[in-house]
Length: 266
Image 1 (cartoon, rainbow, N blue to C red):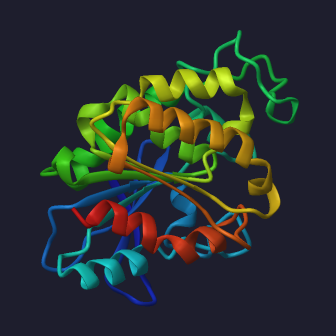
Image 2: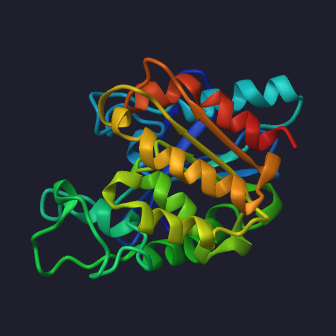
């Protein structure tokens, strides 16, 4: 782990630290006074720093929301590890390689034409990504993490990746927060296989808006909601739809306090 820089974020005490693990960049924040809770976020470019955010300077304002919710609940806020995806100008498909559920999106799986990759050299590497996250990055930054107090959060393809992490590494964390999970990359069969593989012991949050890309989500998300009920998740599952909410960091940031409260209020 090599430190790149430290920087401050308005409304967040202390500093965010940017480090590098080989080619992987990670931003992290640990609250003063310490904490025993950990939140792992995908698309780390968009979590703290508006200068690196991929959507017009928008960020999740994740630390600010975590601090606010934690103050409400009378607990210390969680540490946040924000893992950058791999997309670059040279490798525009790096994010997909990191986040597409490797064991469920195979050569035989239907893929919506809008998200098919024509490059024959494209290989999904999400198993490798999560191996690095859980077995290299987390131990180096937050070595005393406990699965019972660890959550993973992501949006869009990161939402699917969060659910996939619960399937392939269930022993590493106990709450999956999936905002605008991108079910429309495929079909009902793909969604069914993933939901049937989810560990019923985990808490799971899914949400969607009704603007932009999120306006396409209701049919498959409604189908997923029915599967989650049928599997018996009960109050361990929360699904919500938000009016006038789109597919971007600004929209997710506006209601981020709700999934965080779902996780932390235990």
